[in-house]
Length: 271
Length: 314
Image (tube, rainbow over the protein chains, first blue to last red):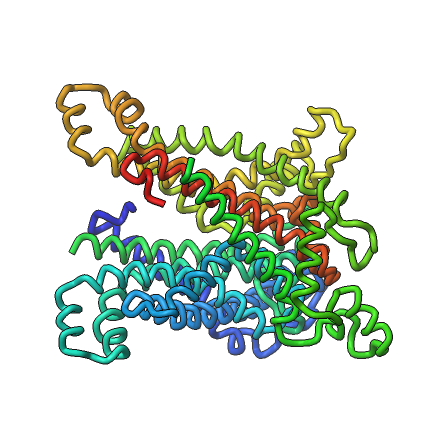
């Protein structure tokens, strides 16, 4: 987008890095920063901000900043693992289908069509209504939805590689399938796939947060950003900002990732 | 016409497979649903009774065909928790959700088209850059943040609109619109950035073509070139984006309905998932899926029909 100018691209990247670090660093260091406690009641519900509690207290009188760090930790973990899983499965299947086809192509196409016929949130709700919420179910559900998108993108990109002369040379050398996928196709499509991964990370985070918000987050004591929004929603009626903090945390992280994607695609189109 | 038939057939096949997936999912997924619903302490009789009412005690396919045949006859089955027929409740909720989606569409389409066209006319200038910043900002916000910020600013600080959208059949039009304002605004703001960005992108693509250069060399004013020369050629992509986003709206309302406690289909589903009322979840999911599939197919056929070079390719 606006990252076409060199200076603008650079400042986009800097702002992006700052925003992502702002959310990810406290989440990463939550056990150190919070002194190990994640659920101690220290005052009245929704008490105002003070020096010890810069964001005030939550619905049960726990430190809000503390809750945010821990919940961001869970949310980021779930979305990162799910995206990674989806990346590996979706991308390699997409590349395989583009290189060889076989029966895998027909089956994968049908399955992906079918999975994409339901909006991700609805799909997740159906699964959770049957399987119940657990860490594994959550990660796998988000990963499946994400993998369908990776499959589509990597397949399209790989189809562009398959017609290149260097790929035909590799075929003529009678390289094995594994070599074709990992040495010829994937290295050449990894850059656009990284941008896609950023987008998928954002949707995974949003999907997880929406589920938490709807009341299907992980069971306490673990908590995620969406659940913290839900728990503190009643505060809004008193004109308090409590549920906005976790929501803003999500927005900061996502805008950071979006800026990074813009910066990366900007530099790529320039070179 | 033949294209239309192919498209419908494709949509129907997908829908049919989706119904099988939703119905049989209960058997594919690991774990015993009956135990999950009733808890570990349930007696063997109550477990057996629940398995029977879920149809888990007979053959999967046999049960599925029975379910599908009933659906096609308009019998949607009974809720597990209230034992009442699903149909009447579902229709009321569906109506509410469609109203919400239609009102938002009526607002978001002209607004995002106008902003998109304006930002292309003023490309690179302050207006365009401001629009881009707003789009980036909105794109990063989860729906509940948009909704809560609207509540804080328009409902709590200034008591303009109600923060809960309770709508009933016998409401006056003015009262009804008043209650709908915040959910409609939230939905509008969460779709606006997508349609606007696509409109801008599609128009800018067309603006690169040689025939636009000729128009520029003729000395036509920029707004005339954008609106009269470029817009007709970008319309396919734009309509496709709109259809995709309306599809998103119908499904994305789930979260927005929850924010405003709006009695729509999404809330019905969320309640059912919470109570593990599986027959309701299955039927509602199928409705969402059907809407999503139809709108996606429509998007596809719009984009084909607006581009003569793609016509005839199925």
